[in-house]
Image 1 (cartoon, rainbow, N blue to C red):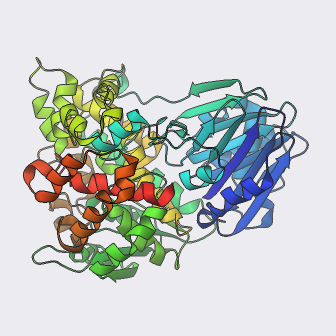
Image 2: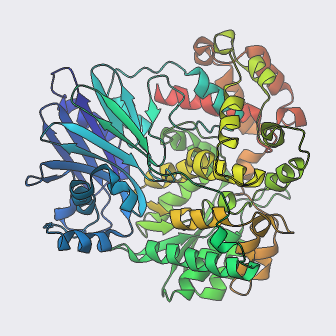
Image 3: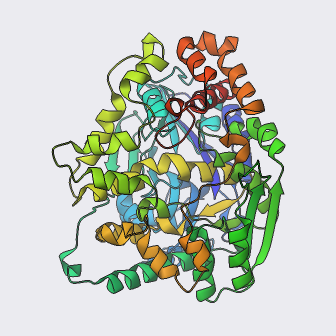
Length: 598
């Protein structure tokens, strides 16, 4: 896990190394162990390293192979690198390091752009061919590792986070109308390639880009998730599916514990997903497992922790547990700090919790496993059954089945919320409709889960966890988003996911007997954040100050009449979203992020 950046010129000029160093400063927390720079001709590459595999200096980056005339910067982990390394050695390639980074470089030399299809893991990387100064960049199938870029007639600049990209200078930071529509409609999810800025894009998951020395560009989508039934599995029973999912998940968990030369822990929330990871690691024979939990002060009857559940898992498996209690005042005090490490504005209230937890965990380990993805892959959220029931009314469109249970605002309210220069068509409905009606999904829930897994989750919980953990040089691995597990789950009939008790039926079946029933049967929980749940007191004052500030008025995104309406009664039902979020918080967070970063 690292931070990468690059500056690639098409106009005959050479990149300014002072610019590259400014970018690297913004990536330092992602990779505190080493800094490296490579520059030749029209290209400069930068790297900040978090040492996890092959801790020696031989795996420092950028990696340059003079024999093959290739240079690489890479962020992520390739779980099958040992197998690929052996295969490439058999084909005559010589290695000078023991890590996974060099394997990517040699794989590209041998298989070309198709090398990504052989990589099992999470990754974002760029390779420069020094013979013709072409650049090839790729992102993993599920978008676990980020890659931001800006392109104009003169150059292509890229980085692992928005902060580093902005540090490159000459980036168009005008608010993008499409990105803004998604930001305020999809609870801050702006799917790739868009961002909140007109001049910044994201490489989409499962996609590669090839650029030549003249700026010519070619995109390729190398992976598509198909949510259709496999005829070969048509006679599978529930027991067959349960066994197959168990085995695939176990394989994913094992890969993410063994491929590391440093200890690996688990972020244990007290919910089903992270508790099941602990159980499977114990089942795999892992000893001396390290687990980490965080909690906050209660407010009234509102519990600020899930310790009563995580403690039961710790007791059963005798993990080496670390439990952290954070006072509620620290949440608001350190909120600006957490926002400064957000690559994009993120309204999920658990972002600051992950930030504060990662600070503590990074003092103990460099790598953790986390439960992100289980809800999207196995239908764990409360709105899935609601949508599924609505879909029984065949006369309505699939968008009509989805939007009323998910969108934060309908389009008419969006037009009330923003100033006239951002008025336009309903960009979000158009995008969601295209995703839902794409081919290769059997039923409505298949379509929703495929869209969530491949698109919406990428720019919400997955991005949030990557940002907040990497802010402290901590690598988070997400076994529920192993692409082989995701592909298998997408083939499984929907009723084995939703079941009779509100989702994740197959995971609950696997967990039964492994973790306490109290953890399995509890209602779906969300990271308890009492200080940010209630839109009142200091929290409300902070949001009022930022949304009525001179800078906010001059920026001219929001209609002040709409803001005043929210401020008068911020906790009323009409001022909460369909997913029980605060509309006021969504707007305040965006403005706070903009004031922090531009």
